Amino acid sequence: MNFQFELIEDKVEFFEDNDLKSLQKKIESQIEMNKAILLGVHSVSHQMHVNEKGQTYFTAVVHFKKK
Image 1 (cartoon, rainbow, N blue to C red):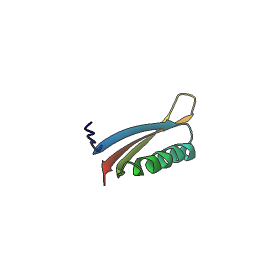
Image 2 (cartoon, rainbow, N blue to C red; image 1 turned 30 degrees about the horizontal axis):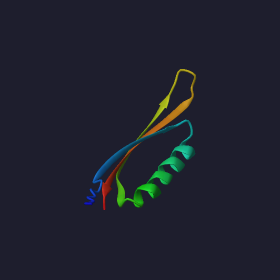
Image 3 (cartoon, rainbow, N blue to C red; image 1 turned 180 degrees about the horizontal axis):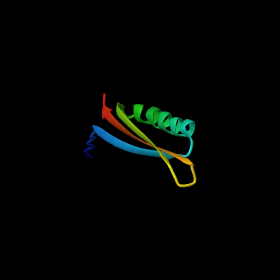
Image 4 (tube, rainbow, N blue to C red; image 1 turned 60 degrees about the horizontal axis):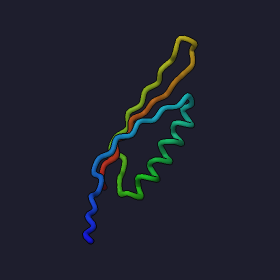
């Protein structure tokens, strides 16, 4: 039996939430998970949107790269 492993070199993940602190917790949790597969944060991009009712909505894109 022959096993062959390939490491993930790049990974992009998208996050969204209505609250900035909750969004931050989601991202921090995923950072810890990705450390286990030897990925570190390469870049983060985020935006805030306000809908017609005045409610805020936060989104983020995190690019992970192999360490």
